[in-house]
Length: 99
Image 1: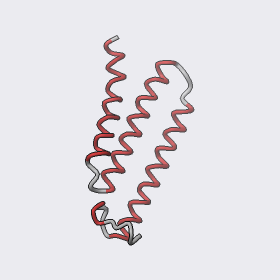
Image 2 (image 1 turned 90 degrees about the vertical axis):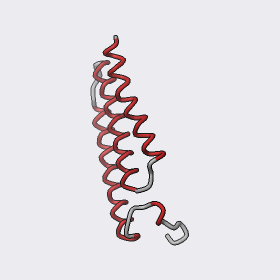
Image 3 (image 1 turned 90 degrees about the horizontal axis):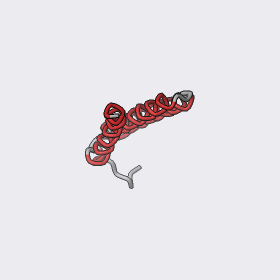
Image 4 (image 1 turned 60 degrees about the vertical axis):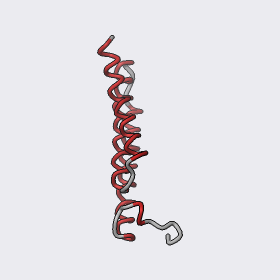
């Protein structure tokens, strides 16, 4: 029983750490994108543990992983666009009125 709770607690702590980095350490756009990917992978890990423990099919997990990969590609395209237009990815250099 102790091992089962450890398997559940580790992904939950990972999600909480990812959320903490996303909320409090958002000086650069790349840092926020990396923390979002970390959160998505932690949620995928948590869901895969639950699905494997219940013995169900993993089609939903593949769909979730596909959406996470699409989100990462979209974030990378946004990062490239921002760096090309503004010169860097610092949030302090963005001006909402200029865009």
